[in-house]
Length: 339
Image (cartoon, rainbow, N blue to C red; front, side, top):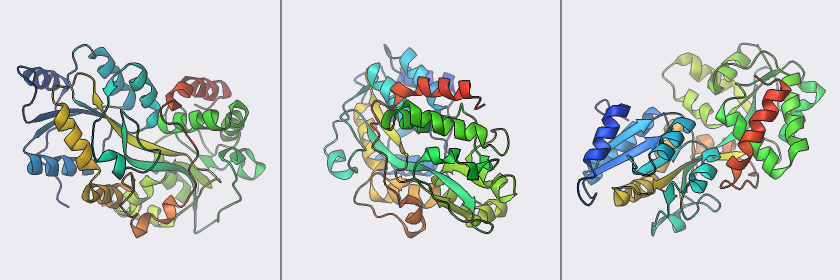
């Protein structure tokens, strides 16, 4: 697929000007302003296809999850964006509590999206799961009932993981708190701290590379990174991806990339159209093939390359309240010494 080189990531100043400029009438101009914490190249191709198909010009502001959430809250009295897209469910709780998003009003979403992946005001666009990886050339999977089994002595000095401040790790611990309780979450945290192969550092792909380099036996990472490495232009990443094996506990944490229409959006209908476009079969297949994300569309079959990476039973997480547990999760991780 061609890379959309013409797509411009607008600056914060440009976004404000563009947003204000689109509010001089009934808000029905062919414009869509998006705040997104997704930072994947393939999204630019999808945006370009949407623009070509609809004639709607898309302005997208990118930032991390907290940055765009805080900005949306600051601007809630005079929103400068129409659509809020986030890579994890942890922010959903605050978005709902702050009344930042409104019912999507889509006639097709309810019959399209997998069970448990939508609410009146939000809808998942794709999913990813937290797994434990190993080098299949030097090791093999071990018995793993729960994530907290990582505290077992057989994992001593072998765990590779990124910082406790990373939203993927915070969300996982928050999910453990919500589903299993504090004792289970604490056992997992203590297991990480006690069994680290090195101080937490880098991103998920760095954990896999370090594992293949022999710095540790097991890496905690999101499953979608495996496909991203396999289709990477860097042969080293391809080699790493080919060597990674993985295992899931009896119930795995599956997180979501989700979207919601902002309260007061000037271009509400355009935001709805983009959500529906993202959920179409073609875009769902693109997200699988190039980004390794599993489809939210229940009618789209998982591609062969991702079948085994998505062969797990999902933890019964309530996405709408997951964010209620993130502060406690972060405190517990810090107190235990997970840096």
